[in-house]
Amino acid sequence: MLHNYQLALAEIPSLAQTIGEHFSSLPQVVAVVLAGSRTTIVTDESSDFDFYVYVEEDIPVDIREAIARQFSDRIAINNQFWEPGDEWIDINTGCGIDIMYRKPEWIEEELDRVLVKHQASVGYSTCFWWNVLTSVSLYDRDGWFQQLQANVDRPYPEQLRQAIIAKNYPILRHQIFSFRHQLESAVLRRDLVSIIHRTAAFLGSYFDIVFAVNSIPHPGEKRLVERATALCSKLPEDLESQIHSLTNCVSLPAGDRQILHCLDGLVDSLDHLLIEAGLIATNSVALQF
Image (cartoon, rainbow, N blue to C red; front, side, top):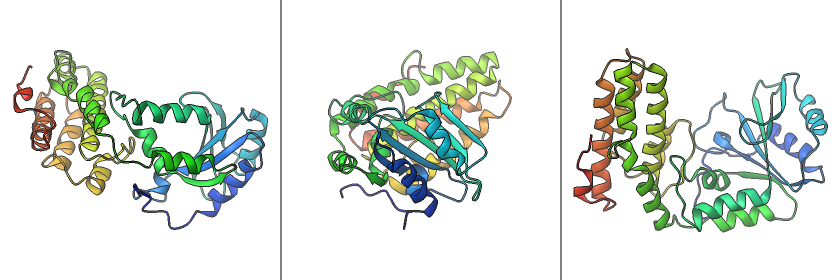
């Protein structure tokens, strides 16, 4: 296996195996996999169990509820806020259980968009790739998921790396309506909600670039400093301390301009990394704010 980020899962927990068995008995189900932090280096006892159930046809909601009630009396069924799914708290362990339902053709299209068409997003460009690479199969009716994993276990496309940087780097601070520009406006307005929102968006694109520089698929929203430190050999100087400085500034009074100074420090360090890697030219970092 070219990519191997499954560094924490020595064996499949019995709870995961049991839940997987319940879904594998249903005729609509093509595959059941365990993913999320439970299968990677960053996990702890409070981590939820994230299951992805790949289906040819939708499983009736009453059947999904019946499965959930075998494990819990605290359930939320047929959530439609993000991916379709169910959630519950396991009554015996207190662990959160998150079941998400996908069609095989949907995930195939998402992966094709990134790995074949090299289309970047504003932040989190390669999260679905990471998700599939780090999933642990609990059931695979016809070997479809095993084949999917094999197909996407490939070198990081250079065109994709460049596309992610081209889409996310300019909007950090160099475009007129960059995240820095928006954050400066929020500070002047003393708009704390906007400050939080724009800082989070900035960090989404910032880490998208950091992982792309290292040719590592983006691992998602949680514990990004810890994941970057563990996985990436090339990091902006003082990344951890600079991130902490920026996030600490978010809680200060909205008029405190120190947050802009912290943001500039992060981008300055990122500039140096990108120039050293030959991914941007020196003249492309001329400040425009």
